[in-house]
Image (cartoon, rainbow, N blue to C red; front, side):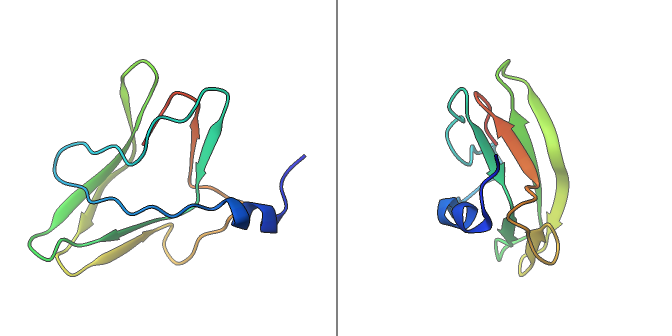
Amino acid sequence: MGHSKQEIRDRLVTLSVWCTDARTPLFAAVPEASFRYIVGIWICGNAGSTSYVRFEKLKEDAEYEEIYCPIPVAPADFRQIPKGSYHIEDPIISLEGGTRL
């Protein structure tokens, strides 16, 4: 049985991470027997130069799988994935236990 929209809203967690040119884990690995659903990503420019952001999934076998790549972000740019708006019942990325973004 699925969760209601209000239950999903109550579980939403926002996180802000400063990323560099090196691979930066956005959060710890998903616990085994669990899932993490990502419904939206917002990217701000670094006010210095154009960046090319890449989102990869680190699988349990230590291999990377590209999810979104490359996303050009100008110094004063703001990007939203998915473009326009997000839907809490339709995640853009699903991560299973032992993986991370």
